[in-house]
Image (cartoon, rainbow, N blue to C red; front, side, top):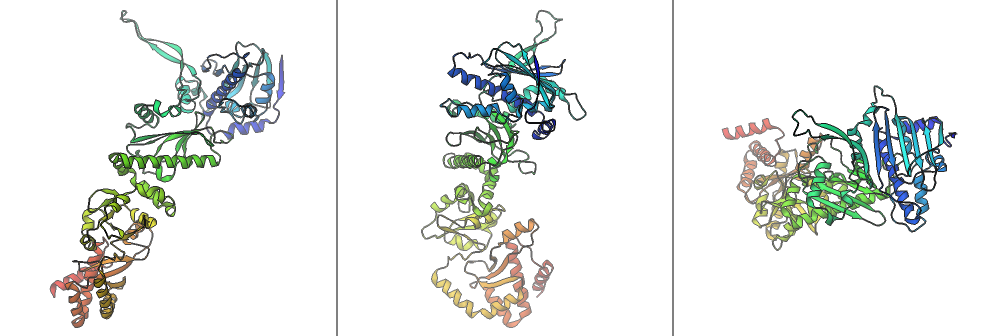
Length: 627
């Protein structure tokens, strides 16, 4: 007997909206139907634990394609459905049998049951590719089988049927091909295997399909040819590597998984295996590639970790799971505690997601800290390619993460000519040193040529060399390390002169104020002219004052931002040149002004800054030569 029934809660318009709007990719239908089959087996297995009348068997899910009839069939030996359940769970859209089942067992003390389906709409994804869907089912709680049939319109038919064994057989009668959609491809053996591998590889039950096998030709018959036959084969892995205990997985297995999963030809620098149980339960498997991927520095590179829920693939790049500065990390997170939206394609905004992301970040930083401490060479290999990311991470958001990252930062030591941490710099500081000194320069040789370096070297103090664009911004955000302030030899008062010498220069400043005013008049682009307390052998230098330094000016200008550091011209009062200038201003002011401009522009060049007026600079040098 066949009964025609109307969908209880929806019309053709609503069903069409679900089929055409909720799911972005048509291939999702196979993930949804396989997930429903897995749920059905979970339910049967759970019921068999408490009801001895319900037999157990070798659970499996089968996917079969019939190209002649253009059908795809998904078969499971799960719990099956009664007539009433067919009406409730398939006849009423968005009434989820899985959700109802979970609500019932949550009131009892039960073993863990991972149910994937939560919304009751996954079944209807079948209509994206099928013009008709039938469900032949027999419940473990009934001796009767029933057949549900629908063309996805306003109604469906339910009739009595015959079926051996419990479970459900869902048959999809594919839509006709169009210019835009090739539905036949879903019957290809390769396509089925690829979709299962992509979305359902870690469903806990074997997923089987017919695959083509080649038989070798008869060695004794030279005219024989290879033949083929069809064989039912399990095509999913079932147990994810990330759900195994860490001590059960070898480094080789992890490396092979990474290289296969993320298409890298090299093993990663390190892998991080995370298993967390508690208010939020999740597994994570993270990798740091040996080298950045080819598109790492391009706009095409998207950050994010793969997201699974209960072993079912949901999203390839979940950007919420990893901060920008750790975008080089590859890997995945699998959790049953993340609420998905109705189509399981995107994640709802959720505190659990943020908590997992915080823990993932913490685990990565802990691994890097351990690597720095216990395997310096490996950390240096990592830092060569990814250290810049850590620096940006420290600088971003006004140093929000500086306490997490400061001990992972390495800068080149002038004295040791190698990368050192701030802690290592501090450990080797001579007695009496009260600050961490740094110089902005492209390398050690460039730093050595800075006139300000002489005073620091004379004290035996080390200098950190800042060579990346972000370095000085990062140092300014950090401000100090372990109560030691950072001081720039290019800018700050280094406070290295002894008290008597400093006092002497302060007294000379008042004595020579008219001379300094004349020098300032000759170079209007300088904000100030002072007697330097940082120079030993050099005649003069130029430094910056205020928030913007010369290096910041260069970086910001490269970003088309119109900024300029305030310049301070410093003269060594103990140098012979200072005496010459004083004499020149007393005898020939024009000549003295030319000398000042030459000295000022030479100082700018030492800082890597071109003269404001190169032509005038060249003319002054020529006139000096001819004098």
